[in-house]
Length: 153
Figure 1 (tube, rainbow, N blue to C red):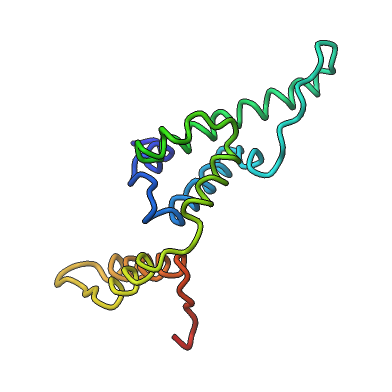
Figure 2: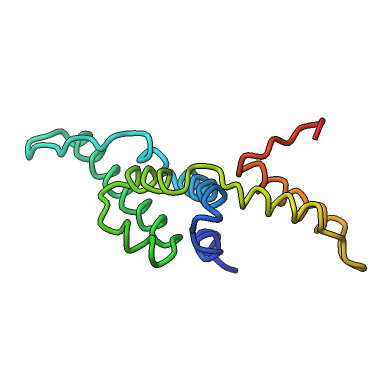
C-alpha cells in the first residue's frame, strides 16, 4: 500500500495549467498533516535563551511545520519552479509567489475543461460510475478556472 502523501505529491507536477487543482491538493495535505497554520500565522519571534518552555515549543513547532510544508510544496513542483522557489524562507511566501504567477484563472484551461466535458463519451463496457466521476472532474476543472456552473448552464 502506498503512502497517500507520496501519491498526492507524485501525481502531475505543478505548472501553469494545473495550479488551481494542485493548490487545493496542497491545502488538503497541509490540513491533514496539521501544517496549514504556517500559511496564516506569522513565525513567532525566536525566543531568548531564558524563554519559557511553551514559547520555545511554539517557535520550534512553527519552524518544523514550515520546513515540512516547504518540502511538500517543492516536491510537488516542476524542476523549473522548484529551482526558482527553493531559496524562499517560508511556505507562505512560496504560495504567494505561485499565486502571483498562476493565480488568475486560465482561459485556456477553462475552455479545455469545457471542451473535454462536451466531447467526453462513455466507452462501451466501462463503468457508469467512472464516467460520471470523470465528467464531474471536467466540471470541477472548468469551475476552478473561472467557469460559472449552475442550474441554468
